[in-house]
Length: 131
Image (cartoon, rainbow, N blue to C red):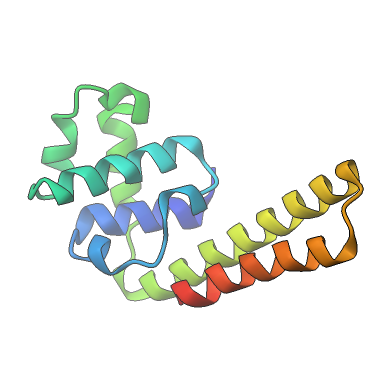
């Protein structure tokens, strides 16, 4: 499991104000479980609720996120001082995954080089807009 993602999510649980300021989108996380958890956190925040260990334990689908023990584990990885660096690392890892996906699709579908470059540029723009 990705330690950067654990630190990121743990930091969001510890300091939920970071959720409104983060540049990370749920789909940029590698772990499906982490994506779902972040989406749930965003939903709670939009509903005006606090994001903390207590509120997360009331989720009806808590076990699908790993249960109380996993949320406590995420919280133990929280590092608010390194949050910005963790965000950058997650973005870099996402960018590398996207690049591999684009190159794989390009090879499988025999894309023209212009299309490959355009797709790679979109990934770079997404990253740069987020930073």
